[in-house]
Amino acid sequence: MRIVLVGPPGAGKGTQAAYLAKNLAIPHISTGDLFRANISQGTELGLRAKAFMDAGNLVPDEITIGMAQDRMNQPDAERGFLLDGFPRNVSQAEALDEALKRDGVRLDAVLDLEVPEDEVVKRIAGRRICRKDSSHVFHVTYSPPKQEGVCDVCGGDLYQREDDSEDTVRKRLEVYHSQTEPIIDYYKAQELVVTISALGKVDEVTERAMAALQGDD
Image (tube, rainbow, N blue to C red; front, side, top):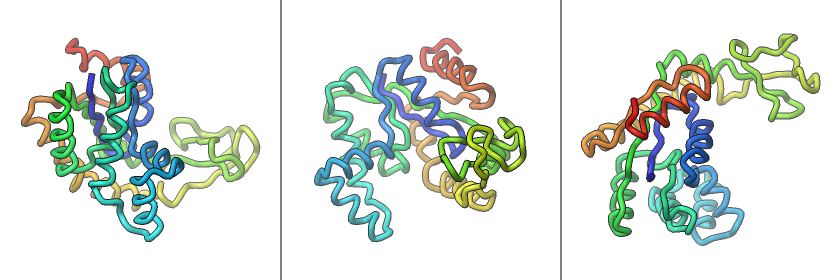
């Protein structure tokens, strides 16, 4: 299957993408991984992207699209792939359609993870990270530490990242609504969108997504 995964920040896209890709035996292709791989390998696209990033500018769509195309043409993606974080806007979605058309294939589904805005804010703004080891992550509601402000694992101080503040989260949501959400209507016109609730436990959401993708819901 060839799938695009969409949803607001905090919807759990990265987590669900990993589980779904494993269950469907297709590669999980995220924009973050694409950028890291191309930059670390010193590819032409990676060097071009790095120049924009070092200057504090957004990477142009054509570079992101080129990286995605290269990755989708790898042997492990012949049977399908799951795109996470791409396309990010309608122009990227149109470019993706054109690229797939040239290869004689098309998307099978666009999985839309639906989460109420207040829940998104609650999920992200409630995160607390350990200063000693950033892999130690807690949540004031869903997984609170035994002692407030102290990491259960190493005793380090817990803090809220600036990116996780409520004001920043709401700004990120505004960007999502204005730039990325329109691709849902774009794909609805092609009858590709499958919308599921992303509320509940991780495995419950995964089961819901698998059922929807397989047409069992």
